[in-house]
Image (tube, rainbow, N blue to C red):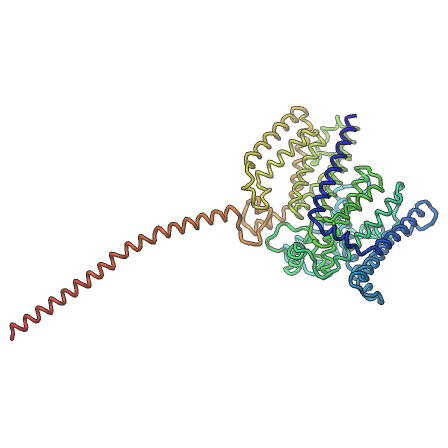
Length: 598
């Protein structure tokens, strides 16, 4: 009864919060209201509905065995369907908005060729990442028991590829020939993995889930339609968003121009990956596609999370993915304001996927064997032996990906802290989770990692709050120590390993920032050298106070100088008068002498 009441309250709160957020967003974005009011694409909507019905009917008939087309349901056929949706949408745009009659296919051929080239270039880079990631997972013996290994391979490969690009950039070797030869060598290391990726994504028939129905197929087609719309929007020489134009798409161009690292800026792992669009293909469209592809990869990561962890029905899961991808924030960063957030989202979801896999194996191990073998586990550096090394390697891989995410955007620090708290929760329970959460917040406040906006000094009470959080965290940890010392020290070992491995992918950026700033300040080591003058609000206030004091000193000194200079002028006048009197006396003596002579 209590559990049902808790679930009911959670559902009611979720619905209430969704409604509040929706109404707030709707009020602040009136353009969506006008988009519905002046809707011009009724014919496109009808055509899209017809296509959705036809595709759904074909897939369901193939699933039931009525027609034998299941072997043709693969990546290539889905890509062909996407090109058809692009032609449908662009044709509706040309006819409705520009009122251009569709008489020739020249514009469509040009558009489809650009879409095809951009898609192929992006696919080749993802294929290389898969190949490198599979090699890393084999070396670490990191395998997913359920589905999702391909996502893990791609994310791990992105990390390896970015590290290689960073090393080349540090030596100024990011030129076409050097990068092409290095990537060709990396591809040769695991060409079988690349061929496996091609077969799985393009050639091999897709195995339809047993619970798939009309809702799932229709949701998939509509999601594909939104992906195609976003792909068409990035086929342009320049991005349309201000941030992407001035920073996120501009930075890969600077990397190409320098042939190496660019001074300043926060860590930019994803910009290094995006720079391949310029270096290898010479196309801004490929750069923008590498920014947008993070959203598509995130859909796959969420699908595997929903299937492996949450056990959601396939149809509801596909519907949820459609709702997620159709939200304005995702659409905005997939087509207009192309940043690194979608790539960061993909890496963070992969970290969650790996961590959930590790926790599930940990629970199975504790149920089966785990009291007598605790002493034997101490032999392993990851605190695992035998088959458990594979479980420990998952945690190591999660730490590596967390460090890589930190090099994409510094806000991923909260993912690292969340996984750290999750380790303690998995081994010690909810009170340990709260303890690590409080201590994590203490470290954030102590190191002033929350001072990105330079407004920390206006947050009154932080200096006291951080010590209160530390005290609460230490008390809870002491209670955990009293309760189970063995699990307590085990959690410490795993936390130390996780933290040290986390620093490995991020350490190159720390070295770069130190050489640029010559400072050991945590803010300087993390943020790097700023593009503008080294100034902040406290320094500006200090400079203003010093300027006012200097002006007051000058005003006090000025009257004293006038008083000191006035007597000198009078003395000079007195001296002139004395000399004139002496000359007059001499003249009078001369006159009197002349009179006596006469």
